Image (cartoon, rainbow, N blue to C red; front, side):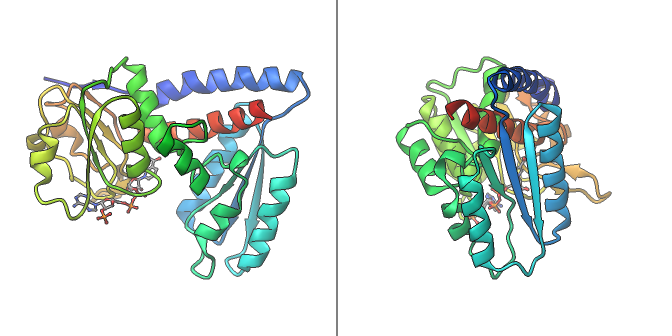
Length: 281
Ligand code: NAP
């Protein structure tokens, strides 16, 4: 069996076209959706991420502001910037790129963002809203995974979903979203005793670990849907996921590639969240 590919670039293109249409409609009413991206320090990966986010905004007709600060910026000064952005009517979404330098308490900074502008969905209020099924911003990466499942018209009701990884930004919110769609959800992590025994039962597997080949073909039930969130480098320095793509694609029903899978969807959902923040006014 050869799995069907869920193409994150193609799906992103569709969704971003819709964002651009809705942004144009808002602009016609005098509102330009605005995202502020705050980067502290010189982390090379973060610099690439923020550049991609700002470019995606520009391409979709959203206004974006990139604020770059040296790694020496004090926590108090960063909190003051977040406060100013909270009050800025031209800004509908605020994203503080993580990781932050060690002297800054990232949790404190995220909690300082107004929940109405928390387009990354990392604020405790956003996490709580997801937990109790109330409206709020969903974290972009698991939200993108849900859109990928929606794109193949996958009905999660009664299906067994196994999420590998329990981070606050991917694994845990992913599990809650799948649960909300009536899947039976198992969350695995580094202390899980027999990962293969869990994944072999799964109709849907989401791998969000950050280690190559965490999921291999012998761990996948034939026909399962496999979503690969991981971003790693292989021996040749090329981007790869957590899933042994070449092996697993022979067993799975659907699979997401890396690159070109969940990655572009994450940025797309940031645009969607920013647009929705502006629409909510
Ligand atoms: P994280 O905070 O490091 O969490 C990794 C999770 O994997 C933890 O819950 C950890 O368990 C678990 N784990 C580690 N080794 C394991 C093993 N051998 N078996 C089962 N579980 C194991 O990472 P994250 O922020 O969630 O990100 C995960 C991956 O996704 C990374 O590669 C990251 O770069 C990527 N990512 C991609 C996107 C995208 O847009 N594509 C966005 C965000 C993240 P414990 O909790 O027990 O330590």
